[in-house]
Length: 168
Image (tube, rainbow, N blue to C red; front, side, top):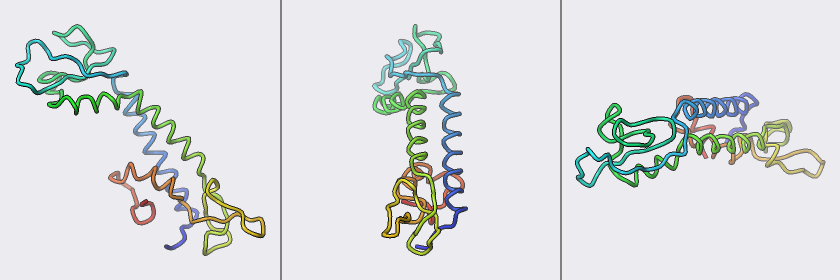
């Protein structure tokens, strides 16, 4: 593997921070949680499929609770299988915001620094993952470290992801 330059380290942390910013904006724009799977709309045909998602702050014309998505209404929202609805409810905006904050903290714990990267005495390495060589200098694998690459892998399908340089 070719040792990355300082721009690569900066590129990944900036790119990943931008993905977290966009995910945070989407979560904050969504109906606040906690979300849960609700009961069927009494006017829906009970064919054994279709579940609604509920959260505080939104109302439904026929169900006395707040609705995120109801089968057959709200621009054809809803989901067909209860496990799908439960999964979506588990990932409500409050959960995603907490997840993003934890991942930002992990990223902050793994900043690039300079040291022996296997090829260069002053190459970019991860400060958190680096060790000390016999001369007292830092040494480690080239940045980004595995931890940062794993964080970035969540967005592997996003524009700008460089699987050659950033893949786990």
